[in-house]
Image (cartoon, rainbow, N blue to C red; front, top):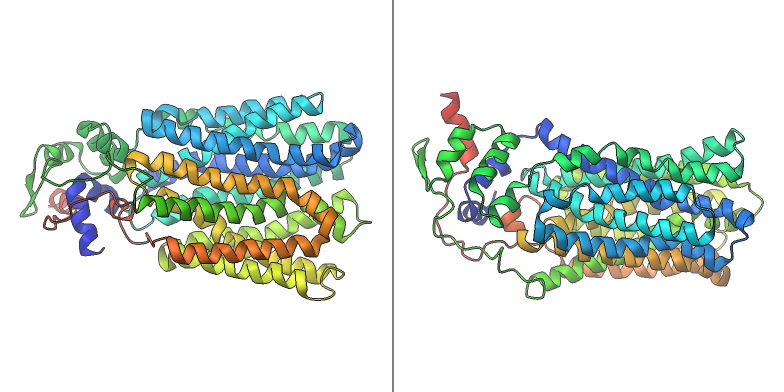
Length: 498
């Protein structure tokens, strides 16, 4: 930990020392599980629609415009959900709204399964999208504010990596239903309805979660509740914590100051329109926008891309190929990013991911014969997926949960996620039309250009939060002039052991 981080920790509250330096424990993983099951559902619901619309096109005689709208409308609704829930988190607290977003997912998924027309399905896909958008901000921010310093990237990244299992579940469910002869008229309904199950399993856990210690102290000023929550997370004595926040105490031969120790922060004064937060917001929202154009454009439309690659292959064959790409390339990419997030940093993972994406997409676009050789195409396409995950798909989720102050963290995250989902909407909406107009090579050339812009934006605008406590990473502190106060967690554990 740097000297400035140590000063930051003492300026805000010694309680954060216990939280930042707490060893990784089951309570951290309970928070991750509670958040991660929502992301499993998000991925399943967002990507299964590509297979559903491929089935529905001949049944409901969907036009290309209708197909594109069904593929993309949840993503557009997610923009509204992300911004709305992000702002609500900052106004009413994390706990007050957590669980509402997955309830929307459950309702939307079940209602979608019983849709009787394009219009009805379109409406309930909007409900799904609102829940998905809300889940992005609430889950990431809550995980961030509960995390310790050393493993924060790993914990937030694990929440998002659950998306990988959702990506696998979609093709697996579709393949089982179609492979076992379930009629298409029933199969698509089951595909949509099954998305309600994983979300429903965590509604109760989300409604019962404690308010995050950073929100309860920085925004509410509730020291007693904060101390109790920190004790629950870090395992320190509630009595010792209470004494610590009552203006300071002698611990392990050192004077530990309370929250009213003269330090000043900008948590309550922070504005996203001022430096450095506006530049950070441009970086987080912009990079997420660019990444999602490529990721969602290719993923939601993967049945169409594979159909263009192999016109005579069956829908089941292309579903199995898509599932194999996710399993072999995407899922390992997620977990490599999780494993290295706190070792090599968010920034490096993000820009190198964009770089390899650009090279892979560019190779497909310009090397003669790639599109006519399915094996060569699928290898390059798979490599792009690996570095999307071991790259900006993971880091764009982690970044905005770390680099905005507590008072505006939800709003900053919501705007960032909204930027991503605008890109996802554009990608999912336009790729079917671009495939018709320019073919696979043209689409991949566009994705290469998008990825190149992502490299530049990452390198120029975004900081590296790895290794910093959340208050330092987010720019929470205005005045770091105070001398270092040792983290209370270390001293408390020594005292209790003695």
